[in-house]
Length: 341
Image (tube, rainbow, N blue to C red; front, top):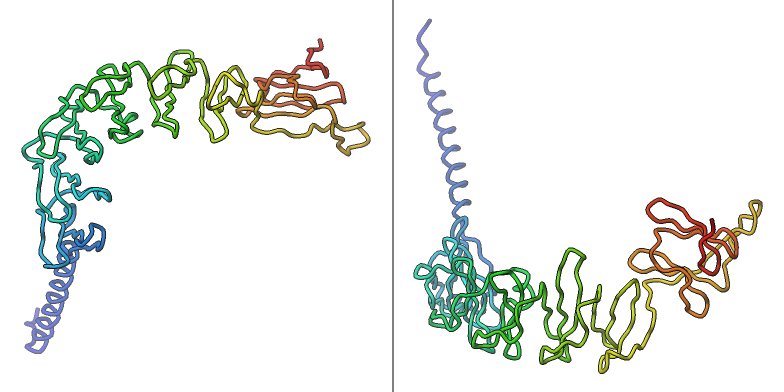
């Protein structure tokens, strides 16, 4: 094979140099893009959130243009308090989001979870070794870790005190209410405890093999309605309760007073066809189909229940004969709710 000529060697070197330069430019672009700082301004008052590299975050002062925090995994924004929670190596700590000062060092504690400091009690809930306790701004426990962490109770109030009380769980996962000293004022016997309503009532529930039953407590945690309802929902005009396929509206001041006996999800007319040759539907005047929890029933024009709302479907065959269906089984019922063989 003949040797390469000098001009051809020069061309090869030039092309190789161009390829090398392009490669350097591409690699440099990828490197700088990977390590580029992403800025989210005006999210922490006068400071900016900076992402100096992938997976980390810092605060940077808009005034001095200098970093005021070390590299962290995450900083939780707090709109109500300058003290906020940060995350580093799966541990939580606290910092001042205005000055950037680390107040409670995550490296000196083993908080796997932490919540904002409560303005009412001055305490913050933390989880250590899967046990919940409450600390002060120095990181010292004011209520020793003794409660089981339960995400269901934390979703209610985020383990914050309201009017002196906070919902927590015992080691069996049952919810109760403690005061700011950590003592139970409502024994942990419930599956769920709601936030306070405007009149300081609380809905509570207990789960069992027979389903979930709801009750209602007053501001002193005394029972207003026992744990025997399928649903309790305080409204502006009363307390909506559901029991035994019935929805009622009870008086807010005196729940023993029934304001409305039957409340339905929907009420509609019932139609039938006059004959097989006349397909024009005719509406019944004395009966209506009602819906409750996706099941159907029949009431008369006075509101009297003719058929309980337990049926998957109801069809009107004649003005005084109905077909009712449940679990793919069909039955005939007359206008008085009596089954026909």
